[in-house]
Structures are given as structure tokens and as C-alpha cells.
Length: 185
Ligand code: ADP
Ligand code: MG
Image 1: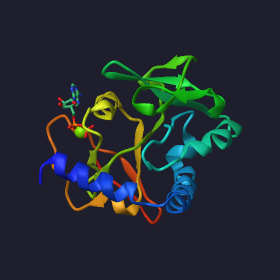
Image 2: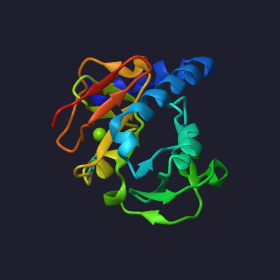
Image 3: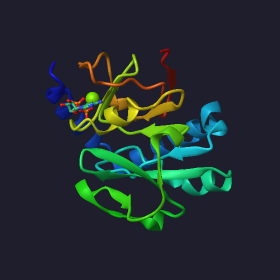
């Protein structure tokens, strides 16, 4: 099945979830995420603001700051994403694509991000990920070296095997409300 069909079908599945289902699962996912050794060890963590029923882990911000971490959120600039330091969710305002983004703040290089939390439309059992079709996170993931990329997803977003292309990047870990999967290199 081509990417576009999987994307359509999986977006419909995710958007059919109720706010209560999303909240409940997002809380479980956030809890699992914060128990990962890579999260505990991370100095700089990249979160994101959810749209269209994406898993919401943005509420981790205060706890991460309290644990002494630096937290960055994405801001779209042309074909790239910049990551800016955020110290309060109030600093996030709707930008391109309706995503709440930091308006201002220190830009942190991708090389400085220890743990990158990655949203997506669909994920498979090999660490592959499908986004909205613009490749933003593929371009960021391609620049990671030893850092950890953690996908977060509801169980309904999991599929058997995603169609992939050369440029598609894999995740290191995938956290759902029910499971933690690790993908060796
Ligand atoms: P998504 O990952 O958002 O589902 P795709 O994987 O279909 O989207 O990628 C969308 C576009 O992004 C592709 O046409 C691809 O050429 C471009 N792209 C992805 N990764 C890179 C990269 N590392 N460098 C340049 N272009 C890229
Ligand atoms: Mg891709």
C-alpha cells in the first residue's frame, strides 16, 4: 500500500480517538517515557506540541525542568525545524500548520539534543515512521548521531510494515500506552 493511503487511513484512526482516550493514553506514554534510562540521562530533551490528536507529552515540560533538564520545542523554518529553548508552555503560540511553537528563544543545535521525542502518523515494528509527508523529522533524524530518537504513539497508530524510501529514518525506541519497543541499529 502506498504511503499516501497508509497516511490517510492512519490519520482517520487517530482522529477518531476521543479526547478522553487521547488524554489517558498520553499520560501513560509520558510516564513510560520518563522512565527510560535515556530520558533520565538526557540533559537536553526535545518535546513537541500536538496537533490533530497527536500524543500529548507537552505536559512533561515542568517535570523535565524540575529535573534540571533543558527543554526545546520545534519551530518550522522553511524546510527545516529549529529547536528553541522553552521554559513555559505559555511561550508556545500557533505558528505554521497551526502547531504551537516558541515565538522566540535560544536556538539549540540538533547535535545538542540528547533525547528527541518524535511524533508521527504511523509506526511499524522495525522502527519506521510515517509523518505528514513533508519529511521534516526525517531531515532532523538524519543528523542525529549517538542521541536517542523516541517515537510516541497510540496503539492504533501501529501497523505491520510501513512502505519506506531511502531517506526515511528509523527510531531507536517507540513508546505506546502499552509497550516500549527498542530497535537495534
Ligand atoms: P514523512 O516522513 O513526513 O512521512 P516522506 O518520508 O514521504 O514524509 O518525505 C517527504 C519528502 O521529504 C520526500 O520527498 C523527501 O525527498 C524529503 N526528505 C526526507 N528526508 C530528507 C533528507 N534527509 N534530505 C532531503 N530531503 C528529504
Ligand atoms: Mg519519511
